[in-house]
Amino acid sequence: MERRIKIIWLLSIASMLLIGAGQGYWLWNQYQFTNEEYGREVLQQVTATAVIYDSLRVKEPQRLDGKQLVKWYTTNTNWNEKTDSLTGEKITRIILALQLGMQPSDTLPGMIQLTAVPALPEDSVVSVSDSVVLRGNKGQYERLNLMYYANLMRLELTNPFCLQRFDSLLAVRIPEVSFHCRLGTTAADSIYQWEAMLDKGGSRLHPVARVSYPYNPLKRQLVYVEVAIPGHVLLLRMGWQLVGSLLMIALLAVCLLFQIQTILKQRRVDELRRSFVNTMIHELKRPVQTLKMCLAFLGDRSLREDAPATDRVVEDSVDEVDNLSAYLQKLRDMTRANDEQTPLSFRTFDFRPVAEKIIRQQHIPDHKQVTYETHLGTALKVTSDPVHLSNMLSNLLENAIKYSGSSVHIVVTCSVDERNFLLSVADNGIGIPAHEQSRVFDKFYRSASLPDRSVPGIGLGLSYVKLLAEAHHGSVKLSSKPGQGTTVTIIIPQ
Image (spheres, one colour):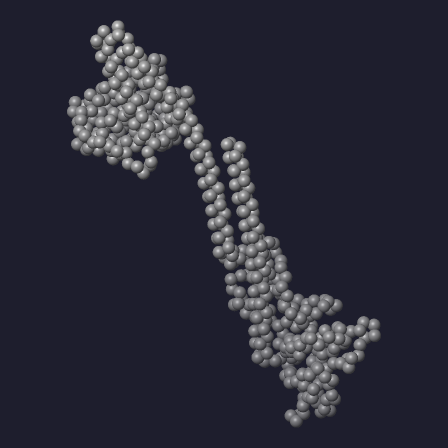
């Protein structure tokens, strides 16, 4: 049985650890996915901010060396399939031109077309402000919208990119996070970057989304944005997954603890059952042996001729039978279901002779000397169940004798007022530690600080007293100091 319990524990703990590890791995992957998703959102916000800012720059007054930009055009120096014999690259040349003085009737042919530029009118003045040469394979640049990138290049010539204004626009779109912007350029021999790109940085617990946006790709000019992704934002986005996983892990932990508690309780019940059987045999042996002696006495005709002795033997036999019946009754009451009410038979009687009889008939071990001090009122008319009240006093006296030294002094006090009946039993025994006093009324509980573990008992005495006191709608109070003794007081309403 012990081996099975250990195997169950090991399997349960291993299962919980594996499930917890699986949940942790899933949450970590979900965290990474949420991080990447948030980075893509940052990329979209940066791109949208750049587009808005470009649209604002187009509408602003155009400035270039104090002159007004009137027209622009592009030309291709190698449009007619001229290729480099060594590399096979196609060469595209884009020229941005300024017209500074031109008659109203004159025009610029070939406007915003990728075609060869025809000869300009002689009376026009054209100033080339910037140009760029692109090299690549034949189909590479045919797939690109060169007009759009040429417009970005012209926009940068007329209204340069202002980092402060871009920063302000971006702060409106992502107000919940902190970010840092800077301008930069790529190397002249590097590959052109045509679209915004996202790169991850920082640590796993403090991720950073790095976005590079080419605001003038033909001149390799980019704006770099670094956004520190706050951890609480990611956790909030993972809210239901995180809460669900934590609840699942907590539920598994509770189930495992409940399982372990149930197994431990079952083990303890088995131990208590074995102890109960042994103790019950020991407790029942005394009245049975006494009854055997009485029967043996009554079976001898010569001994029966002594009438006074015969009367005492018969009286003792009746007492032992009563004790045996009370003990079995106590066992029956304590094994009732918790929700079953203890049956009581109330009547009004004088408790003084009952108490004196219980004290007189109390069994005293041979190795102990017991003295009693009684304080019994003259009028002890009590309304209660006489059998159960007698059993409560008997249990308290039995505990006082059992858990004391060789010299035992017991004080029994009974009193009745208009509202309550008080029964108090005090002894000079070993006492109960303070941390155990709240548990001595539990079923089957025995103090771990007993000096002699061989003292018989199964921990039913005080729990039985409490059960019956509460059945009388009363209560039990306990006062004890280790080494000085214990006082138990029963209060029963009248």
